[in-house]
Image 1 (cartoon, helix red, strand yellow):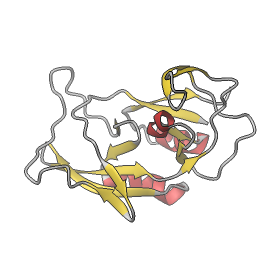
Image 2 (cartoon, rainbow, N blue to C red; image 1 turned 90 degrees about the vertical axis):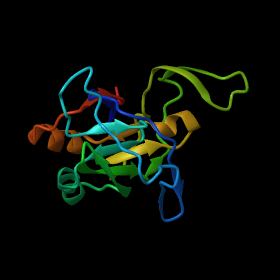
Image 3 (cartoon, rainbow, N blue to C red; image 1 turned 135 degrees about the vertical axis):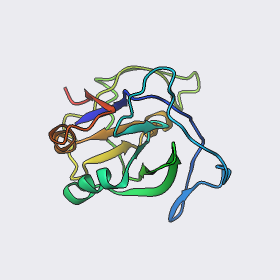
Length: 169
């Protein structure tokens, strides 16, 4: 299994809240405008990792994954540079964190992760889901992980904006 990181321009970060049955976007004013950061690059990636635990892309791109992968998400529309994008928040949370092989420190209270130097999933972990988050510590719930199948579809289609790191070995 692989972890996901974003290589595209970071444009804005918001506090979004998962609620029963969907995603609460009430924190976003109706007239708020989003744009890609142009100072760094004119590159517009196909995917942007948004708040680490959700993906932003055009609906037709994500449809390829929805049709070929097992993925459970909330979805909401956002306009960026006057183009319609969709925010996909991954709902699936699984217990897969390997505390023995990962290198991390906890806050003094021991309830959450302070720093993560190396994140590993349990060697015996298996899931049919192709996109998921971890459920153990709150800090881990903000990272996305995918299957080799998800990565292959991404690469075969030449999509841009994400990098993958090995979380299994």
